[in-house]
Image (cartoon, rainbow, N blue to C red; front, side, top):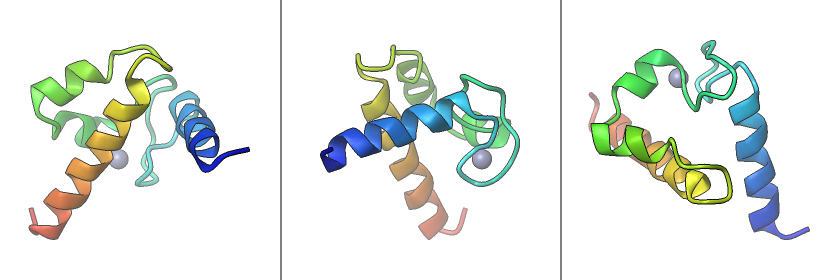
Length: 75
Ligand SMILES: [Zn+2]
């Protein structure tokens, strides 16, 4: 299995699970917990509605990058 496939599976499991990457509870089939989700810019939120395999993984990766950058800035 390639690294890319592993990453895709990891993202899918996270989407189906009930925990945000931060450890907080989230709804199944939602990407993030409410505080994380609501901190995203509207454009990033809307791309997370893309289907899995049709852009969702990329949107998810961008959202994670966004969170990391915001943390570094100490927000
Ligand atoms: Zn979270």
